[in-house]
Image (cartoon, rainbow, N blue to C red; front, side):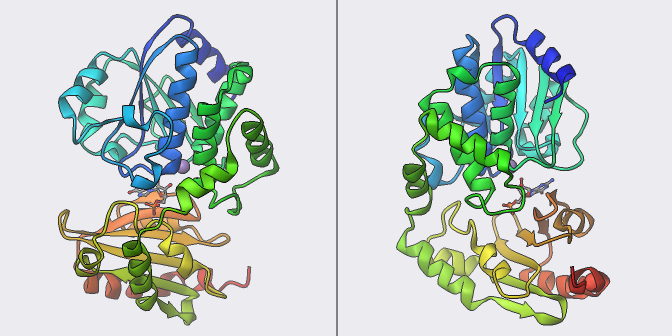
Amino acid sequence: MNSETTQIIKKLLASPQKIVIVGHKNPDGDAIGSCLGLSFFLRRLGHKTNVIMPNDFPDFLKWLPGCEEIIIHDKDTDKSIATINNASVIFTLDFNALNRTGNMQQFLEDSDARFVMIDHHQAPEDYAVATYSDTSMSSTAEMVYHFIDALDELSILCMEVSTQLYTGIMTDTGSFRFPSTTATTHRVIAHLIEMGANNSEVHENIYDVNSLDRMKLLGVALKNLNILPEYNTAYITLSQKELDHHNFKKGDTEGFVNYALSLKGVKFAVIFIENKQDNIIKMSLRSKGEFSVNTLARKHYNGGGHTNAAGGRSTLTLSKTISEFISILPQYKNELTDAS
Ligand code: 5GP
Ligand code: MN
């Protein structure tokens, strides 16, 4: 975090504030871990804090210290609105455009609070008095660690904050394997372990909680895996019927797309998940190397994210979405078959 942003934030936090910390819609491990970590840290500095998420988060995160305090806007709307309206400072974490907060957007836009952004996605909006944006960062949770460091407060890291931040970094780096994982990330992780994060327990809590339904759904996803060798591309489909048949719960399809990306030679992978309730096909896009799924998702699928991981949606049927997807690939053929 640069010194100008640090000074603005030090001033902002010089007296006790009523702080709201917000993550993005369909929160993942990084959104939940970074928001809870920042919340517990700011409380230790004497501020009053609340974490609000636009909608519910997956069960595999529901052991994190403090997760039971999170206000879910779509479930507890009155409380969420009252808390937003009462805030003097609002931190937005792990997203950089207010339309990523779903039904909360209007209440955030109407708020008189001063905003602070901490985020690692591309193309940040300009709504904050202090913007800490760095697309080279592995995760927002790693940025919260650097934020605490910039305030010279690393000595007050506790077991809870270390665990929350460890979880955010671990989930956003695919357990420290994506290219965004740097030597600094590992140093941060080492320090978090020293300050109380139990690394092996966190891994077990997140990854060793599969239901039989989820494993069978993975079987269906793998059966539906297709490869388009001429484009070094692979994709997976899951229909609403297939999800229903396996009692789909939020988070069950997390990581499935990585199986498509793990095929030898594949540079670009997508999972298409039908959502009849919202009448959309939700897409998760992943790539290896230079090919930007962020650009592709923004251009064709009303989405975005990072170079190697992005999300988007289609309003066509599942089969039309697939045929349209296949029809746009020729424009990317050179990038996808480039030897690099
Ligand atoms: P996922 O595929 O896991 O939903 O998302 C991958 C990455 O892209 C995450 O960093 C997520 O925050 C981001 N992302 C997902 N959907 C969208 C979207 O609709 N817009 C933008 N800007 N980013 C998204
Ligand atoms: Mn993130």
